[in-house]
Amino acid sequence: MLAQTRSRMALLVCAASLAPTASLAAAAHTGGDLISENNLRAHLEFVAHDLLEGRDTPSRGLDITAQYLATQMKLYGAVGGGDNGTFFHAMPLERSKLIAAETSLTINGETVTIAEGFIPRTMKTVAADAEVIEVKSAWLNAKDGVDPFAGLDVKGKIIVTDGALPQGVDRRMAMRSPDWKRPELAAAEKGAIAVLYVVDQPNLATWKRQLDRFSTGGSFMPVSRVDNGVPSLSISAETATKITSLLASTAPGNAPKVGMKMTVQKETAMTWNVVAIIPGTDPKLKDEYVAIGAHYDHVGIGTPDATGDAIYNGADDDGSGTVAMLEIARAIANGNRTKRSVLFVWHTGEEKGLWGSAHFCANPTVDLSKIAIQINLDMISMTKKAGDTNPRNATLAGPNELYLIGPKIVSSQITKLTELTNNAYLKMKLNDKHDTLEDPERIFFRSDHYSYIQKGVPAVFFFSGAHEHYHRPSDEVDVVDFEKLTTATRTIYAITRAFANSSERPVIDGPARQLLGLGDLN
Image (cartoon, rainbow, N blue to C red; front, side):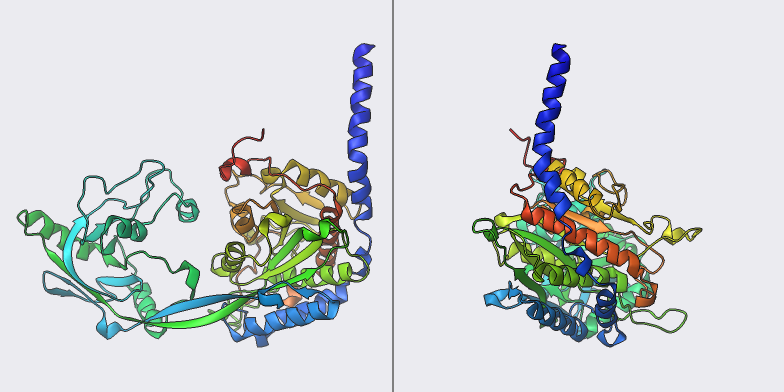
């Protein structure tokens, strides 16, 4: 009887604690019917139109899209959340144009042919004639005691390396980790002046295309990502053999010299995150934010398909998330404002490597500590049809299904309120297949929400899965499932409102704590 009484008491306490949250979830969808399939289609027909030429970063088409998004938000009555109260958060870019006639590599005076024996890897002006030294791996991690430079005098020398990470270390994770320094950065720290990467079987056709591209202007990069690493080249195995043979045959104190010359010219450009705020209504909570984001860029113009179409319109990727945010903003602004302010950020350059979100989180226009949660929308409009056996659609979500990535990794509180809100409204299937750090596709790390996670902001990611049109010219408006896009947008709207009206903020209490080095909760 005593055990039974305790059980009833526990249930009553649990019910009492759930009641406000359940009530909040039930009311969160108010205004969701304002979200219109016709509006979503109209917005997407503009954003994914051929005239915008695939919204590459940077490009005129992307700039036009940014202006379109800002104009819509002005019409809804939002306020600018970007630089100096505008709707734009500027990110300067830079690229280097290689002067091939002034680029060379020599080994003890013998000239190596460009695009056959070597190709620039990181383009920086350099003119050096220096000794060479082999350093296996050349990746440095002082925190974990990994130092392949130990005992070597590399100061003023050119390093030859295979650039391979220690066994078991994932390259993508090492590139993102603040603890690992890639060879160019490690070499700079140790006093070396350049790095030569050995490529065992170079694709010379690819090297020739790279030379052509570098000579007309390489890819733009954010100025903030132009690092202090030393210049580097890729060299063929044959070139490397010449160097190592000389190293083996040269008497101590008379090491062979490598001459390395590279001349580049700098070009600058600008791109923008589009940032808007719909202010909250609560006297205290309005100073906090629920952030919602999508990337509005795609990959531009590329290789034509069988029909001759070379414009990669990106209707699903991520035109779908881009236009969903517009309709969510319109519904919130139309008499459905929330206690917390809602921060809308359309990120630029996601396809290049999360550029816009990383730039926003490094140079925020609001206090990141005031963001209760960031909700990311990326590719939310595609559906796997019954009987579809195309292997490229194998993991595509069903008609009333989205992948939700983050709640179980990040926060039990996110899991709770998200499930209650979804179940109280349209009851989409929120698939947690990718919601684990052990996911072989590592989806959690591959979209803009991850930039916020790295700054300690709880974040989640809605996604419908990869498909046959992914990064192809066929990702057009006519392949989008607008019924699903409407349902998904209404669901995300309700979840956004639930978090924006909740008196509590999610706490990172999942495996992400260890990922971020936060330790255990006390």
